[in-house]
Image (cartoon, rainbow, N blue to C red; front, side, top):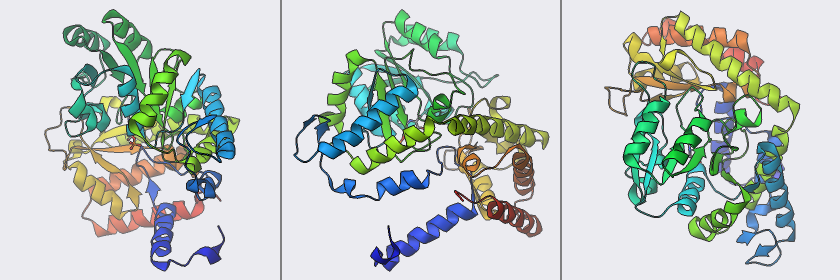
Length: 411
Ligand code: PLP
């Protein structure tokens, strides 16, 4: 986009400030990333103008020949990337992908067994105010108190007690691998279908550093903007005998026209994720998370379940006498962005919480490595132990500025 098309100063000034904020702050929000300039460029194209209800070759509008090419590229690349028989790349978001999956697999009022939201599940996995909790009867499994990990024997016992139509595996704040084969076995035992929501770990799966749920699940949903580093959006993967139902649950079931500019950006992101450089990136994300968790532990700050195997960790800031909200604020003052988060069995209310969730997907994209994680862990510990000490805040802020200046986003 050339500069001269920009006449709306108010909006462009805010966009410029947000771009600078991303450049100047270390982004530790586990669900965020920095999409490539090419992915971002695709979203600013005339494809946004096109109505294309339906699917390639079967549209309800004329003039779809070129957006068909784009959607075919996105679908083919998605299938190749994840080894899935079929893909639907139209969901506007992860939540809408989940909505379509539920509509395709079960009926309103049916029982679903999913991860408790307090233990790391997602809003769209049965929150009472979300469509999922309104239309389906959700029951939940959680982590075990001692290990803070999902115990598959407990999941099995609950599945036998609840007899759900659908078993749902996947989380927003869980740092350990879920045993997809065991989930599939339990689903078979209780005659349920298995859905896996791999929103958070999709990039790690694509990069080959996390087990894939695709061979085990009846349907897999994901977001394209987290570890996968594409545009904001969702996707559904499934075997070929389910795609007709999935497609019609998504459109016309839950959405109208697809966002063709975003689907173009998804196609570009899938090609990026097929490169060796993305495999190296995914491996680095996991190494960085592990070093960051170890460094915080060495500084006396407890990590839920003792560490992480993926890109995310839950830091128990209650262990040093802080609330998650206070920790989030303190880190914001030193230009480190994260979010407060409940920890399992949290005694604080959600708006305070006892934890912060940290993820390494975005900072790894800007080139941070293990050495940087050791520095970062030290700065986080220093800040959280003296959140009112202006000298500490000033010093850490300076150190963050030096690092973000030295390792800018996409340069
Ligand atoms: N599923 C999981 C496990 C998530 O963590 C998220 C987002 O954080 C979603 C679904 C929903 O994604 P979206 O915000 O695109 O609706």
